[in-house]
Length: 224
Ligand SMILES: *Cc1c(COP(=O)(O)O)cnc(C)c1O
Image 1 (tube, rainbow, N blue to C red):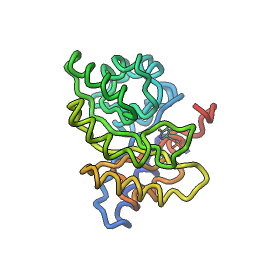
Image 2: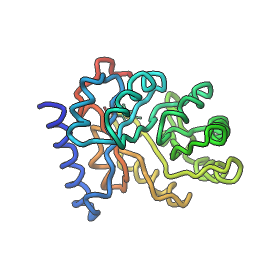
Image 3: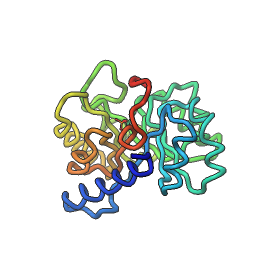
Image 4: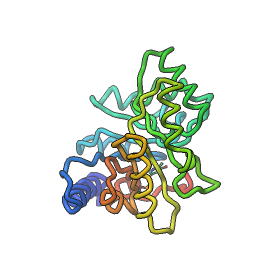
């Protein structure tokens, strides 16, 4: 199947999963994760109608996306990978949504850059939902207080929570925990679910799913 066909299959599966969960078919946004993929692979998906894309590296996105943003109107670009503080200015300048706000220092830097650049990317707090050492994100028990501090100390508006559950485990309980934390923090947006588990995530209330390989095919470097 071409990536455009795979894209259509994913959008149909998302609508069906939403309906099965008793939700409106249009209530789940698809973020197409295009990391490591080149323009030749991304353009067919743009031509098929997709406009929301996610990347995990600032530098790679800076090279790839400005020309595509000129060619196609209304692109929404999301950063879903960890943000280093020395890349904050570039990230605020390029991305429409930053999903990986995960520590005090980054919250402070983002607030500073937003004021300086007069740009307001939408923000998600990333939660290390499985409390895994190798993953970034704020610990679940600290998440609600961190969202509060983003608001009160840094003046940031947080749109929702994001997570990546542990691989090779049933993701359901992790998605349920993220939904519970969001509710406690007064947030109604949940970024959860990837190629292997986005239908499950939708059953647990995902408002956006981040799907890469199911659209674009496997990545050459699986760790990318
Ligand atoms: C790579 C990546 C995805 C997409 O993963 P697939 O399994 O290819 O769908 C989603 N979210 C984040 C944060 C990623 O880094």
